Image 1 (cartoon, rainbow, N blue to C red):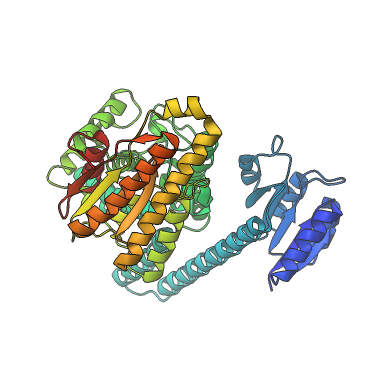
Image 2 (cartoon, rainbow, N blue to C red):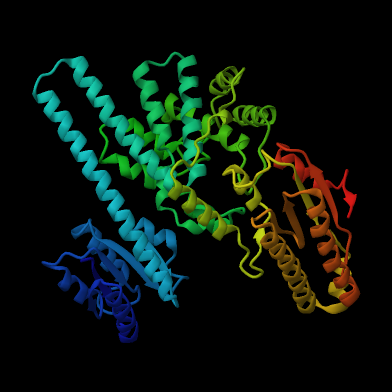
Length: 516
């Protein structure tokens, strides 16, 4: 049974948390402060300590330090309302596992604990597998088998381990997994052109495959965020090189792997992170990964950004090299590598059905706008990447409502009323789309929001399309009659296989749009 120690000087909090955990099958004990918790820890094995920060005798930070020193296998989940004193990075850097701000919902606590125990299981499995691999290697060496056979077995074992970790990353975030595979191939090709020994190229490739493995510990709210990061998001995301390197520092014999993982975001002028290393402190392997990592990030499309073309990406890398942030020679070799080859041709499909289900749910949750309940139009990119859309087999149409003079409406009717009106318009359009899909017997039409407008993606026969667009226009005309909210909708038809990026660009520019 999973054992949890709850530490809080507030009896109400102790009682609520204890009852919740007991109801969910945890073996739960409580302590009134840090000192009592220290006493209860003696001779006991707890999986998780849940602790408040501000407590008499021994506070949460002191208890956290004690647990990490004496019981390194125990996770610590911090709960506090003093966010001005204790911030997420302080807790993580001190060895805490996660952080909850008071007041909190029961579902949040349960989700945090589920994640902790899920990651404990993954880490223990990895450690067990690493131990098994090491034991196998020792037996091979002890038996004095032929060097060539022993090396082949060793390579196979290590490759299996890295493949396992790579698959774990794929299950966590498919975009990060695909990025790692591409960076590994780009780096390998650069290393080969530079004439690096085969052994160094092997280390380079393996390190690249797991260079972002630390992202498995980054909260979903940040890792899967479809929009741009704010300052705090960026700070937490920047912890991933340290988190990833820590996994390998004590568990892999080749220190070069951990070094590449930790320092692939450094820059030659010292402006990178996490340690601000510069110049000769950064060897050729990590210099290669820096360039490969930046290039792939620039040219790959993500839900929150458009891809940069090859020429523009190389121009940006050359500028970075001129300013002394990355290695000029590596950039030059990258240009040679890219002649006649495009790393974006490397892709990894979500093969297992459950992986597709998990990925669809994650993206769906993060693209749903919390107040309106509608999906941001960038969710279309993810649906297209995972082949949910049928545009490759069928023609499709796009329509945007194109509301105009909304500023006048806000001045005339006020912010609150116009927001309510726009929500009602959106709901009426959504109902029309849902009724259409029920009649079609499948989800041929999808509705999204975009900066105050609504966007429709439709795959259907022309006569059915006319019926749907007619209902959409009727809804918009009714809004104009009732509230003087004016729209000038326009649509575009696209042939089978037309790229979604180009289609949306044409639609939003309205250059070839036809009034509907």
